[in-house]
Length: 405
Image 1 (cartoon, one colour):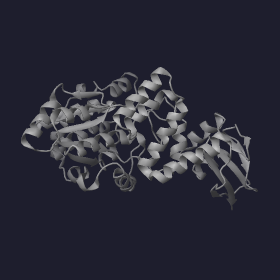
Image 2 (spheres, one colour; image 1 turned 45 degrees about the vertical axis):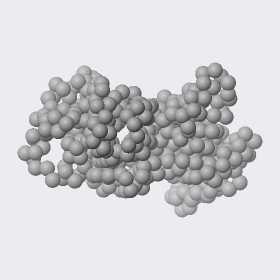
Image 3 (tube, one colour; image 1 turned 135 degrees about the horizontal axis):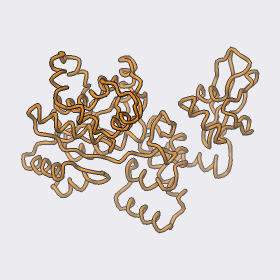
Image 4 (cartoon, one colour; image 1 turned 60 degrees about the vertical axis):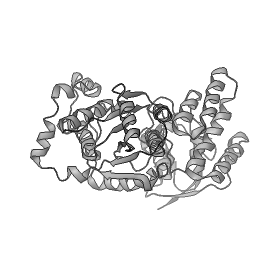
């Protein structure tokens, strides 16, 4: 194992808090002394089919622990996923079916290992223990925390004061996440700052079940490409790690300038010295932010698609947007229809230019949609299905649309 000072510097890099104060240092020193790797846990609920860069903030921290010789434990939340994490929510999440969660989880497992070393990662499904629990065991778990303690959660408190409904099953979520730590005997759990209540509940439940409580490490929440909301597929402000090199590079070029340093620090592979130089350049105004976004986009594409794809994506972006050229190899999309007209927002979703109708309508309202190079600004507007056309959404998305009855 590497020396303590080197390990703790890497572990704390890019973190928000380590809790309680001194706990992770104590566990790390004991780990080095006894040559026993720490068991470091993070859970992922497969509530959507793909992983985006926001997820990789935690995965990359896990990779750092892994490279330091510690044991990573990934919890695939097939049971917690069916409940839905209430953290930061103003309303109850729609419950997913077991089939939906399983389908998403299969995709997640493939994408996890674009960041982590599969051979050194322990993957567990929390259905392993929750599916076997008797009702008496569930009641025992529920008795470990009070309603008053649950209502200390910021999101529950706000909903309670506003008269918004809070379902009992939502209150089980922190307990379930906490019991995951008991089941795998976690030494450390990591998560976003919105997970702080859940992570600390894990410590409490471990003590109640006779275990040494885990240390807690919180990480920043990655803002999406809009620079306002957290990265999420539901808001359309995401960069998926399985997206095409061109889409990944183009979306990176669209982020606000004030996110450049955060993205380099949290989701890109750059040497420490280069990161410090980028921070100085941004502070002093000694660089065109566009050049740094090019470097960032190339770095991200290289990580998930390789060097050749990264270079091609950069060249394609320069050709297409700096020289204002429309790409020559535009994909054709066949859209099924039974009418002579269809809402453009629906066409955009079917063609893959937006994840939801809401996102498609927002892009249209913001002037981001063009048909045969003519702006289209009515979010409820219809298009004729009798003829094909060239669809352009935003700065990067082009499709030749053909309709089929």
